[in-house]
Each structure stands twice: as C-alpha cells, then as structure tokens.
Image 1 (cartoon, protein in one colour):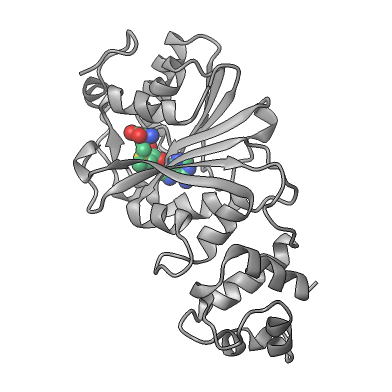
Image 2 (spheres, rainbow, N blue to C red):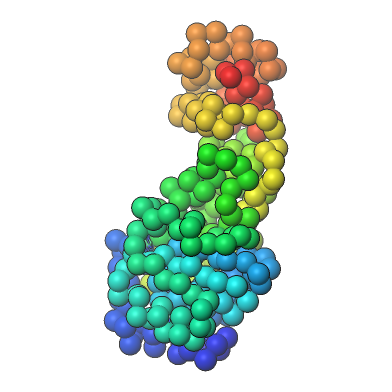
Length: 278
Ligand code: SAM
C-alpha cells in the first residue's frame, strides 16, 4: 500500500476504530492511497485553496487532498465513529483539517471557508444527487465554489455529462452544463471500494463558468426543463401544456417543433424557451 503520509494504512485505521461499513450511510470506502491521491489531483491545483469534503469516512480522500497541498480541508462527516480517525489526520496536518460532525444536508459550512473554494468528495450515493443539485442552483452565480470533483455511480455521472439524443440526457445534464464545464475524469470498478458496491463508479469534475452559457432565469429554466422531462416520451406541446395554454406558439417562436420530445432539445434551445416564459 502506498505511503503518501506518515499515518497508518487505511485498513489498520478501519480495524483500530471499528469502522465496519454501514449501508444506511452509503459507506463504500477507498482504501488505496494511490487512488485517493489520484482523485485529489483531478481537483486541480489545491495549493492556496480551501477544500470542502463531504463524507470523509476513514479519511482516504482527505489524506489525498492534504498530501496534494490543499491549504485547508473542511470535512463534514455524519458517522461519529469516524471522528477519532479523522482527528489523527488533523494532528498530522496541524491547522489544515477541520472536522465537522453532522449531516451535510443540514449544515451550511460557508462561513468556515475562505475563497478560492473547491469541493471534493466520494459522496454517499443516497445524497449525492441532492447535494449536486443544491451546488448547481444557488441564488447567485458564480457560486461559492470554483470546482466540484465528485464520485458518483457511473450511471449518475453519465447523466451529468450527457448530450441531447441519449437516454441519460435530462435535467441533471442541463443544470450542470448550463453554467459549468463537466467531464468524467476517472472510471472506477466496484472492486476499488471496500465493500464493493453493486455498480461501477466515476469521478466527475465540474468547473463553474463565470457566466451562464446562454441567458435564462434559473428558476424558470429549471421549471421548464423539469416539466419537459417529467414526461420525456411525450411531445413537448403535450408535456409543457400545463405551463401555458399557448405553449405551441412559444415553442414555434424559438424554432422548436411542438411535436419534438424533450431529449431532442439542446441547452441553447431550452434557454431560449425559458426566456419565452419570463
Ligand atoms: N470519503 C470516504 C472514502 O472515500 O473512503 C468515504 C466515502 S463513503 C462512499 C460516504 C461517506 O459519507 C461515509 O463516510 C458516510 O458516513 C458519510 N455520510 C453519509 N451520509 C452523510 C451525510 N448526510 N452527511 C455527511 N456525511 C455523510
């Protein structure tokens, strides 16, 4: 096992602290420090940046982030059993790791972070999409973070980077690609984790653009897209009828055939359609 720092190997950390994986917390740990260092490198230049990590668990990725030179890591972990293991890492990197025990869905860590801020996480799968949508839909843009480097089930990763015409294309792709560059940077088989999950995983790297690619009101765009994909097999004139009685006229006005389906429509056209509802 690689030694990127003087701390014990992760298998030993897990034994020492009794960290048997809990399914209810989405615990599939990364124990190969070479791999966690590689994921940390995908997050870009971390020197001079604060990193928010959700779900550090026994701290494999945390150690990768610190070894990659992150100025500070703020780690939010729900499982109290992991805190002593994380404290050992904090002791090895004085002043660079702050641990918050709590639920990432109800904690607002912003006041404890100093820009530039990057987010990196091997996310608990049960809350991964919800956190991503929150990070992609803040009230103001640009957001508080510069980049997101996140592990997802491969199927979710594909939904984030999907292009029109594919089955994976939908709300997540449009929300992500409207104001970010998004790409899959690493594929991981189930065996990379302990215990192995049932499905493959992938790391997605998203960089926040300073401006949206096309103008649109975020709330309206989000509503139009959600409504269109709610009934993705239907023609848009039917799926969007609830938004306005004259939806066919509005579709025609921006050059979208009312008989087309949501998955055929690109980001630029969705933004144009959203502007019709302003
Ligand atoms: N980052 C570690 C690694 O790569 O080995 C652990 C990843 S594991 C997939 C997900 C982690 O998120 C677990 O440590 C779990 O306890 C934690 N977790 C689950 N739900 C959480 C929540 N709502 N808030 C914060 N952490 C959570």
